[in-house]
Image (tube, rainbow, N blue to C red):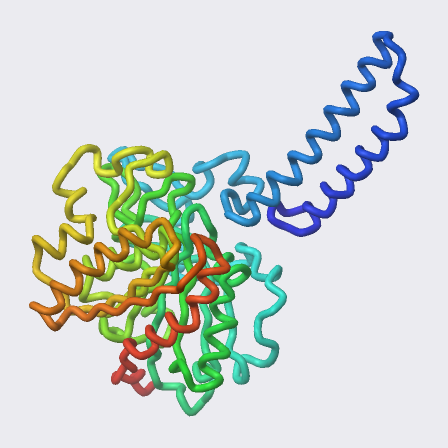
Amino acid sequence: MELTSDALVNSLLAAGSLSLLLTLWLWPRLARQRPLPMLGRIALLTVTQVTVLAVLAVSVNNSFGFYTSWDGLLHPGGAALSLTSAGRPKSAAPATEALVAPTAEGGLETVADLPKGTPEEVGKVESIRVTGKESGLSDQMFIYLPPEYFNPKYSRMRFPVLVALAGYPGTALHLLSELRLPQTAWELQRTGQMVPTVIVMARPTVAEPRNTECVNVPNGPQTETWFAKDVPAALRATYRLGREAPSWGIFGYSTGGGCALRLTMRYPDVFGSAAGLHADFAVPEDYSTGGNLFGGDRTLLNHSDLTWRLNNLPVPDISLLLVSTRKEEDYAATQAFLGVAQQASAAHPELKVDSLFLDDGGHNFDSWRRELPASLEWMSDHLATPQDREPRQ
């Protein structure tokens, strides 16, 4: 029984209900003040509390994606990565493994509301494992291929790409099950509000359980290299995708939103546009990152601060969308960065900045789902259709 399955939650609920009923039924029979009845009452209370706590723990884990498997829970951080003598993470997968390979992991079969039909009619979502040559990292992702990808009329065409990043400690599956990203994209594409786009769904927590904020950690996971170099190279080698930055965009919410903005500002030759929903504009120093990710290196810390970059480094030729709600705790930080970005854009028109603010909402999927359609339309408007074609065989 999988850790994130509904069957486990339902089984624990049944066990909790049964233990509660047994407690009510047996309690009068164990009322005497003798050792055995007292031990019986203690056992009943213990079983009831353990089952209730187990239901709560599994439900919270399913909502926030702390662990996606029993192996990840029982051996955190040990299954996906190992370290070389230099401290550089590398994949535990064999060196001969393909850069992109189909996989059954990730829980795609649990998403029941994907568009129904043939790939030629509604497109297709696939579960894949991507392995990076340069960073040595490997992780499971989902990829949505639009119907046109399977249409012989477009068999030599390349497609624009949207890389979508979940939050921390969420999983790539949340982009389908909670945010409903491919479902919403399909509806927008079907109604002509979004161009046919390949969507790659990933999580920023490649080196779980640590939150690396999509940066290269000195003597640690090279997450920035993974997203900016390895992932695009592996996907371009496998699918018919655009090769220039204007046809690549990156989108994310929460930690994924900060990653999207940071990667685009640092790699404008890879990503031409980004949308950050409720994003951080500087790398936090908290329990999730294990303190300072850069080991006290002030230069690296500054270069990861988006406001510092706009004030001190050349302004990149990119398009950014900042999304939040006026009642969200990050609203003030978003407004502050927006002001700096607008000033930079006035002096350097190659930087284009837009914003979207809801009147209410919080740091949750309800808000992100409401912000999603407009964000995807904006991304579509800023993704250039690749002009290159597949060479004839």
